[in-house]
Image 1 (cartoon, one colour):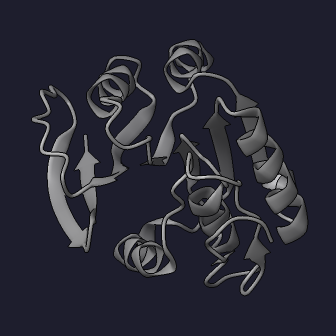
Image 2 (cartoon, rainbow, N blue to C red; image 1 turned 60 degrees about the vertical axis):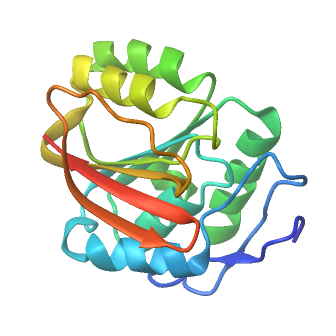
Length: 188
């Protein structure tokens, strides 16, 4: 395993598998504590769901969802190194058959995805901190109908990020703080 953090799949068919991380400090994988809390909140919604993992990094969240019974997961990241690590992690966990990995800028890919009419039950969004990507990405999700009715968008961000969001269709319904990490839950 490379990198500082040792990531693992918490439960499901790939339980206990270690996930490769990306070298350097450009990625910030979701810790096991935060990931465990997140999936406890989403427990009844994962099985059979179609998941979209934006700014996917290592693929940590989408892989956990697949391990817990999600029907499919699409991973999007613009970093070639992240794309390579996601593919390796999917192969290692034997979850690649239900996964699609798309290299590219998240916002550009989302705009193209609106044409394929696929809607997602759950969207994980863990953009780089302090890059002002949350508002614009959520707007694209709203405008392009990528989330199903009653679907959930989970945004992971820094507790220091107090950016006000101006959204029309997505409604914030829950916020949980875990140390320096905040999870914000939106639904349609």
